Image (cartoon, rainbow over all chains, first blue to last red; front, side, top):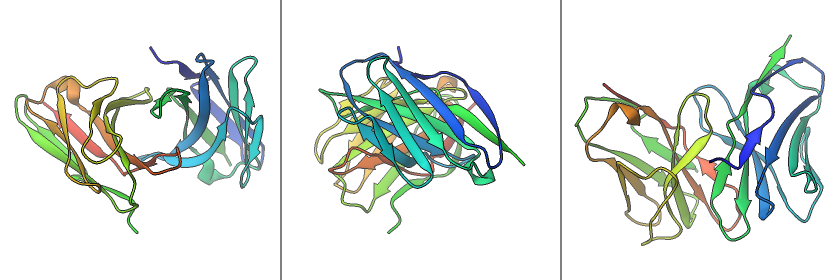
Length: 112
Length: 111
C-alpha cells in the first residue's frame, strides 16, 4: 500500500491567508521528499523539495518543513492567491531507490 | 525547450483494441517514467526506465508494455485495452536531480 498520505483531502483558504498542507509518511528510510502542484487538466508541476538531512527549505512564497521524528511533512504557502487553487501532492523516495511514491493529494480551494 | 510532450492528448478505445502512447523529452534526461492517475488517487508508477536500454516494472505494470526507443523517447503500449485501464496517463523524466518533470497527460477512455 501507499506509504505516503495527506491528512486532509480538501482545504479551503481565504485569499491572502497562509495555507498549510500536511503529509504523513511511514517509511523512515525515505531520504528525499517533494511537493507537486497539479492544476485541472494539467500534469503535476514541481514546487519544492527537501532532503532528509534538512528540516526546512524555503522557496518563493513556499516553505517545506520536515519532521523526521513523527514522519511528517508540510507545505506552507504564504499569502495564498487564486492561482494557488490546485491539487497538491507530496511524494517520497526511499534511500535505496530513486522512484517516487505519491500520496493521494489535497485539493486546495482559494476563496475570494 | 518543450520539456516533456505526450501524444495523443485524448483517446477512446473499445475493449480489446491496442494503442501506443508516445512520450518524448528534450531535457537530455536519463530516466523516464509512466504513471497512471485515477480519480481521488495519487500517481501510480506503471513502468520506468533508469537509462537508455533499460526498463523496469513499477507498481501496476499488468496489461502494459514499454519501449525506451532512445534517450528522448519512452512509449507505453496497451496490447488489449480493458475498461479498468481508463485513466489519465502521465509521462515524466528526471536527470541528475531527483525531481521529475511531467508531461500534460493522455486521457484514455476504454469502453
